[in-house]
Image (cartoon, rainbow over all chains, first blue to last red; front, side, top):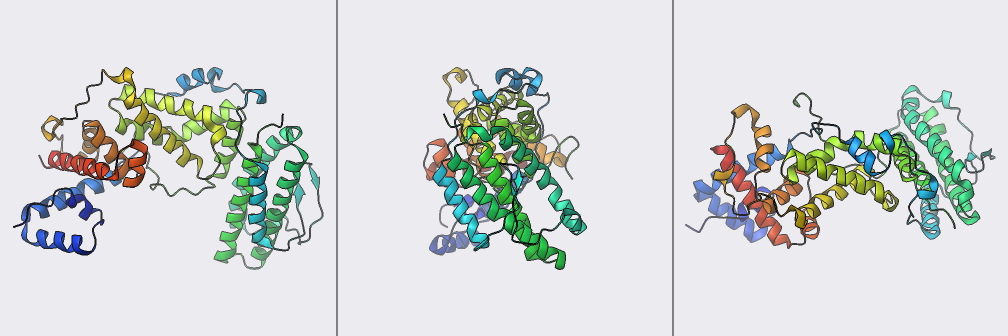
Length: 221
Length: 191
């Protein structure tokens, strides 16, 4: 009989062998009870490892963290002046806006200029939130909460951005808001359409992501 | 069914890039200096990160220290978080690096890690009905290299190539360490 499989046992258990190596391993296993037992034992270990639970620390570690980051009792707010520099560039944002525009080519309408706080004309029929089906309202609620919070942050920080950044962010948001409005309008007509539901969710994700990135932009010095 | 006091670990590494909407707002607030928002992030991820760290280092006290280090590092580096993955994934990766670097620290030379440990050094199994808990404890007694590879590969779902990059070893070394760890644990469970 050939020598035992050794490390190839783990590769076999992980499905990492193919071709001649796999055929050789299977030939060996068919004749070697010891290696077959090892395969069974290794699979058991792997299955247990996948099933391990997470467990919180035995004591609360936040106090020590709060002290080290200068947050007394974890409640202090560090002024913006202490913020660290961020790595997003205007070209990156512009690229993001271009990619997002592909979601809704030709879109001309807009929902809200959140940075300026003024409403803008919309090219798509606006769907009041209350007109949405119940399950869509439930989906939108956490998004709306988060979006509102981020918009508040951006409103506070608006003066820290240069005009080109503001224009880029607003252009991207117009495209996203247009897509959201279209998706919501379509869902009023066909509320259980899985594609439309997924599209709305992903578009809300995109808006949230863009807002979050914008909120983290560095201050222009 | 999960044990009392435990929380189920989310599926390995399949978090969406966007993540939870409310979390995204907290990330932005924390990046702007709001420590209350950061505390909420800590509360949400503490169990996940502490469990990862506890398995990669040895002992609850060390795990607490490294977990705190990881969150402090996250606070300091929030500005580098680009949102290309979820915050949870980013934090997880950062914690892996903190735990790996912690091991390398000269200050940790007092460690009782023994690369020559064998299955016989591992504690005996307590009872057949607590195999997962038993495995969790046994992981902590593995030789450090084998333990870290096992945790990263079999618990956390990293690929050998990723582990090799994180640990500064070859993929072949990662595979060998994984097999060593699995065989030690298998022998332990079958005792």
